Length: 352
Image 1: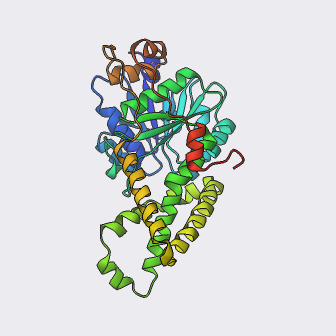
Image 2: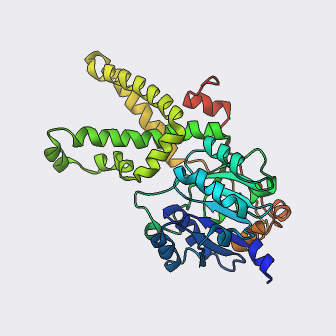
Image 3: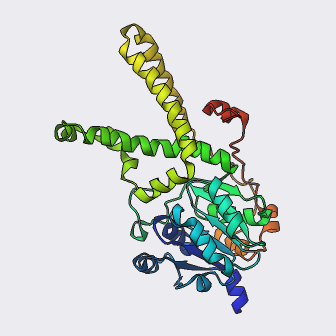
């Protein structure tokens, strides 16, 4: 295999913390893969740990070394480092390269990509709905994304083949791709991910700062730990989420505050006992349905001859897999966030 062919069959992972190293672990574990995984990180300890654990085949010391001819580039750095990383790596991206990310918000990220990435480079935003409180390459897991939804948010200029390249990676990681518009993605994640994070912080601080903390801590069980779990996440991640999705978070916080006031009124009025019971029962039933029947894509049609994951992804990265994908596999289902019924369920008005 010549130098150019090896380059085209390279995945470059920028940032080898929990997410980047978990991606690398899974990709490097694929049998019979035809691509190289190269990693780079500003923190020498992170890239050394990633290499030692088998999350990358090779450490790069510069963007030039990591990106030379790479067909697929995964940016997995903290979101506030996004503009700098995109700007600094831009000169070394090969024409036709596919760049994706793992950032928690998308509106600003797509703007950064449009500003800093050169013409001819395809940006396809990504957001894995998976993670844990522990950080760094030492906490990485090859199965971290197994069964998780992975939001796909293509830029307006991304080719269909580039989108399918990212879909191929997502499926190789064991996740389910779901397509979203950037603005819709940020509104929805503000409701189901970002607001719960800040509510967990607030609840923990409420109890921790009370004069009764020591006694409360003795009583705190799984319910309190589970409800406040997100407060143990990376503060830098939370800060980046706030910086890039502040308006959407405040929108949902205002709505939550209104519902909290209504809940307070309900709890304070002994004459509304039946109404409270109805609320609790309906919510339990609705959540049980959500937990027991999560949305999933349809499996490939019976009898379809599907190439191995490693082989398919290798050809994606080399830019030759798109037509074969259409021939061999069923089209991944599209979970569209702009579905009017979904907007109504979440109470998002078109004017929001």
